Image 1 (tube, rainbow over the protein chains, first blue to last red):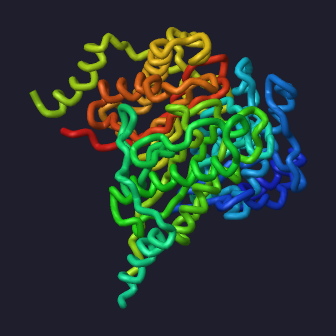
Image 2: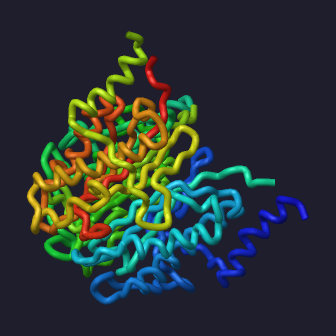
Image 3: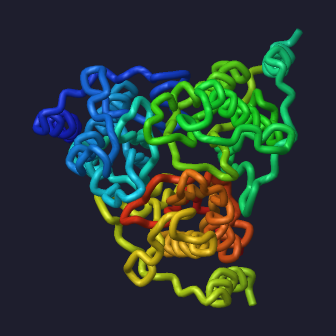
Length: 162
Length: 162
Length: 162
């Protein structure tokens, strides 16, 4: 087995092992594109926790959602980020640079890092070392359609190990 | 008519057709620069909805402002982004990569995409294909000076078609 | 004295003059890295106002914190950004591009620029011309661990003047 096929198996195998079937990427809600590229840079628009074409996680952390709900929402956002990247090229060809994590949260909420780990951990599980990233996680007053979490990603295209 | 003059007419003509006279770019409120460049990358600082040197759109979506008010505020922010870019080089020379749209909004507000379309649509109307962009739109608790919307842009300089 | 040693003295001397001893960089609270690089680009994760390993500035602007408290918090965040950069390379080798400043703030708060100046001014004081940056400053509902301010930075590595 060549290094390349091992590598290809890597992401596909990890997705399968996690029981994740990448969804059809959701079209933008408005006047923008889901992914914009320049040179080897790839900016993915803020993704909401859509599952099967509908918003699966609405609400606010510290109000009507638990941290576990938030983790699931962040994971759903990250799944959609992966789906958007996969529409541009093989997932093996991306290395993440920055994750922006927005948590709809009350003024008293403090566990934003744990919530956004739902996204960060999925990136690491699926992309391995290429999934490591810098991050900013903050609490916002509200998000489009009442979503609980929104995640955007800046990545680069790299030559896949072969 | 050369391709270049057509192209120049393009943006100038579209601005005129929209009845937009680019304002004098507003100086920063504080210790930063309005635009920072590196290589072909251009980062525009967060712009507020200033019109004729004063904040034209204050308030919060879902509280004292309608979605239409928010759209107008986002459009004013985007006009100021264009003014900042025009101070760096001809508008034909920029391609947008990412728009960050911050909407001062209540916890119950859900129409952030419609509000930030006020900025996105203007970029498309004025810059054409080069105005397409990835985007993150979120609701924040408050913005500088009580502004309703703030818009920042990451762009690149491209060789204008000629 | 060579230009290089003058330059080295520059940042080291300014830090000393400001009475700043760069802290040990704080490890991330979660599943991400403090700094991610690609080419000459350097993205620093959102930094909280940690002093001696603990959160030194909790609360919200407009609620239980004054603007002066916020300025001190932003300055502590910026100090941690510098510590993270110094762990990657000499501070002389960085030029800032973008500062993202998140202020935990009430809906009525309006002085976000003054608060985030606590970070921007420190960058200028320590890095000189290389500390100039574009910026977005916004008010958020809450931040990790109840922090008052969070600051992230996008920078580039430049060849130090010699």
